[in-house]
Length: 296
Ligand code: THG
Image (tube, rainbow, N blue to C red; front, top):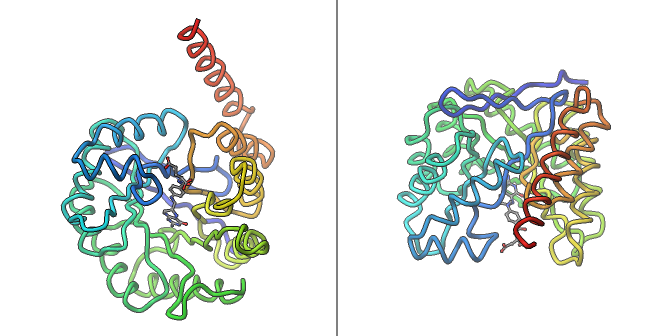
């Protein structure tokens, strides 16, 4: 068993630590025009209000890190991504996860970021490794490694573990500390393949045991195309945390998901004196009361 590693992200002076013994770090997924039509329409219109509101709401709900994606078909992502990040940083002070497949946009984003960001992402393809890892090294950022190879998404857990190993080897070979690599085993929808969730959980366990690195994933992907997604997402979330996932990219505004993360942390001994659970309960009651007061 490898030693559990700690990934530290920062913005300004503020640090966030990701480690298996610490509470799970939710990475808020909502600032993403691909996943959300309302964000797409607003960004296309040059309106950043929804981005600022989403940033505030997710942090308030308990996301210590926010994913920022500004990929709009036909738009100039090199200009737009840093702009969206600045809007986010004007209202919250949490570290950001820079979600882009465009290396030029990534570099422009890293230039405006003052701290240690999480790059989302590199994968096992040569083109990606060669473009992204030098930027992670130059800017001292942490980086998510997706278990995708030249041949696509591996169909077996062993093959995904091998891609994780290749990314870790290449990154550490360039002088990137191993604790700055976060592996994404890839969460795929169970509506297309009923074994997809079980396979992902297997990869989480294998990567954790062999390398001790932190694990992320777009955990809500598992329920695409299914009815009542939030229950599926919550159950999968609890299991993935138990398997070793430490920083899911998820929607903290969904009560079932958020409470499942807190309850999982409590059950796994990551919530000392149940302080996190009780604090979240009080916050929920207060919000419910405010909502009642407003409608009365
Ligand atoms: N791994 C990594 N990064 C990722 C993903 C991943 N980034 C993008 C994505 N996957 C994670 N982000 C989202 C964002 C939104 C949704 C899911 C994943 C989502 N959106 C609603 C839906 O499709 O039903 C839309 C809701 C709305 O329009 O308001 O579920 O896997 N490293």
